[in-house]
Image 1: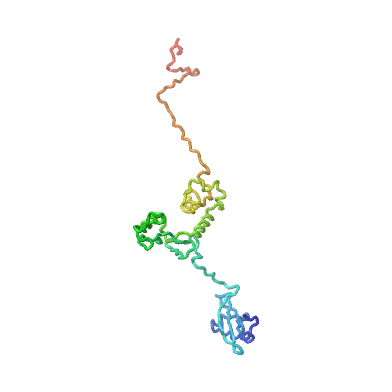
Image 2: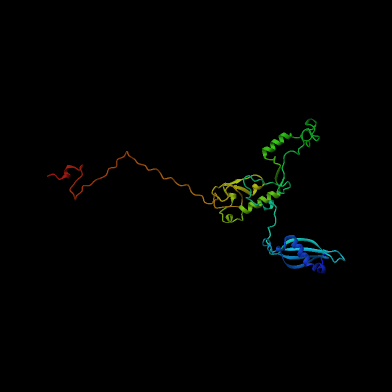
Length: 292
């Protein structure tokens, strides 16, 4: 247990502690004596100001001690410690915790831990017993009339079917991984986003929604509207935007009918003589010409 009262002989060994700091870093880096602190029984730490311009706010801590029933104070250690106003480097964070979405660039490799909780082993068919194993020693030895006995399928056939169905991956998303992905997608393109709050309808009724398979397909899809804000991205079925296919349906424009010109019919036009000028039409009757 640390003693609250510093040992008297150790507390009086100020010059011994100062000389130890000077021997370690030089007299130009050691400043005034700042205080004494008891570290334990007959163990005391003296602090001195650090006047080095590169370590503002730091101090030298020199620990001295003495043996029981001995008056000789000896040096324990000399260290440079930061004070409350010291400039410190940020706490080191592993790269796996510093990584953020979008940090991965071309050529970068992102290793995945073998025990990553977001993943779980996939089905590869390796656990299925081979037809010639001790469990199934040939189909000819099986009693196929027994409904509880089934012949073992060939491993080659299982592998081909698994590859065709996309089931031959070593690891797949676990339930935790699925939930984490769903939470991320809900935050970016979910029902609580400002875009969805002001949308005329949700993506459930939008014709641009592309359905996806798996369990996540019950709540998410892919936007296929090139003019939408989420084109090519995973969106919640409760998401929506102004580009909804049924928000505003424009009526089809009516094409104007073509102009019909009939050039085979002659329409007569009645012409009257001009009384002011005395001229008459050339085809007027002779009695209308006014001969005397």
